[in-house]
Length: 212
Image 1 (cartoon, rainbow, N blue to C red):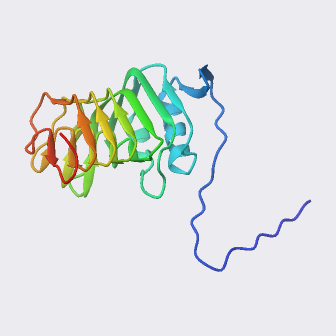
Image 2 (image 1 turned 90 degrees about the vertical axis):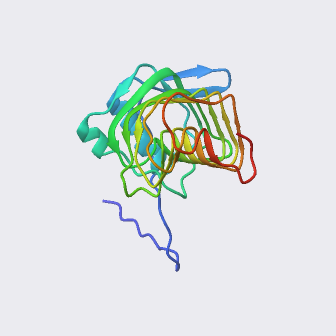
Image 3 (image 1 turned 30 degrees about the vertical axis):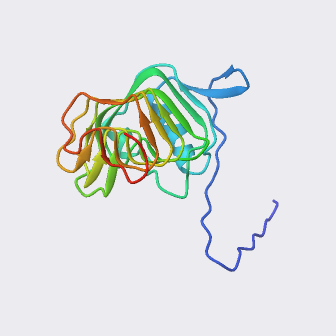
């Protein structure tokens, strides 16, 4: 039996496992997408992204509803993992039942999330930042809709913080006090966006450097 010896670096490091995902794929132009056909597929892909497989492209083939158990198992999306792939909702809806964080924690400069609707309940009353799609967007969120109830201290329908571009997005979800329909803190661009439900801060609550 082979024996392997690993020498760890002298300083503390964070190791993220990257998994090969066995799933159907489709090719569009120069991009290859994993095709998500079930809630199990979706959970597997999102865990892989959270654990460091951040540049994978994903396309939904149907609406996805996470069970209570699957929602409880949903990974906490947090830095330093930035999603750098293309996530194509293809007009479908992901419904979650009480996941702790938005579907994406951080969308990186090359990341694109488009044609996706989220529903259900996202965040808790103790969440510092909460939203339907992302905590922080440094990429592009396009043609997305929030129908979920968003819980948290500072919250928005699409992204809590935006440094790049949110385009053609709509909030239909429930947000109570200290909230914005699309983005809470906007230092980027937000164009052709709308609110069709209550949000105390309007469409974009704060504009330190970007448009609303």
